[in-house]
Length: 544
Image (spheres, rainbow, N blue to C red):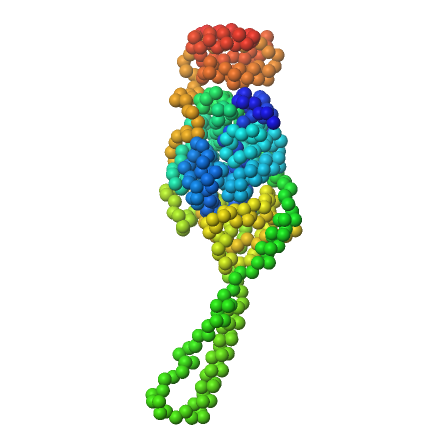
């Protein structure tokens, strides 16, 4: 499959309904770059919600993951790091080594994880997407489209709202370092922006999937193939502006349905589940049976003199004491042979615990966090998750509700194992048995800026149409307002470097609808008109 190298593409949707607002080359298969990590994170959130892993599960860093090129967190081969830090690094810093570690930890290898990512993409309706890795570095056969990435952005917002706030963080504690957001500049400059993900490679250009909310409206848009960070951000701002202008104030929210996936290797999955369901916790019977402890009264009493006479009554008493001791020993052995079942907290899924988990304020006892803003959106939900594999006392009797989302038969690394442990997949006919849940409050927090995975231009985009400039350009007359608006948007995308901060509007005249760019200097207007005329557009400079 040949993939084009960085032509421009854009797509704008009303997030409430999923309806298209604007499209340009939206179904062209292009390099998504680090927008890929949106799917990596989607898969991680899915795994947490299903109980496959926990936010504090420690993932083993392979030499392959540690060798990924920048942007990087700086992981070392053989290191173990909690999933929560990998998520922060991948979402905020766009760290390639962190994304690869997530993929390998969830699926056992990056190729297996990429296949699972692609299967999930198809289930989400992303029909023109194929993944070959977890981080988005350029490789043959790895592609997506502006439309598909917008669909994925909407899915992150609706399917995992409890984690979505990570995409608006300006910085985050990633365990071994505090990482800064690659998207801070756009988040700070565009009113209502709260995510989602940047991307850049030479083959892809400058990419961005963004989401913003104003009033009752939420718009999600994707830009692929920008010329620079500044150009990409300016184009995105214009696309979102157009989206807010076109989207109706009132719209019935249509939330996407849960994805439906076919479980791979069903026979193998069922066999694994049955094996685990039959496993019994190790009982200390053998150790208990090897020793019979006697109380002080059962032990032989030292005689005061070797000449003491052993009477029949003394013999009878000694025999009685021995029989009593033997009986007590048998009772102890029998008691120690019975499996001890400790009552554990009830296992609940996201569908049953819901939003009340987001309001939890207790911090993890194992690792206190720093100062955290008092914002409920920053507090992540508490998840019931598997205990380490070396915990022999975990109960095997708790049932887990059937999961409705992604099911996979894959290994998961744990703190106790040097090699990834086999992941228990969910089957329709047999439910797996999770260990007791551990209650934690996981907080993704942050506070500081920088753009790390891109060659960032030093120019900061300022979007002030009233810059005191009285010149502009007009682009002829059109029969409909929509036709004129489409021309303005298309021209703004193609000539952003020339038009700069010019404001756009359509004038309704007696002769027709007239598209205009205003708020320009005379030199800028003349330059823009020259370029537009060279493209056979009807362009006239207008002055004060």
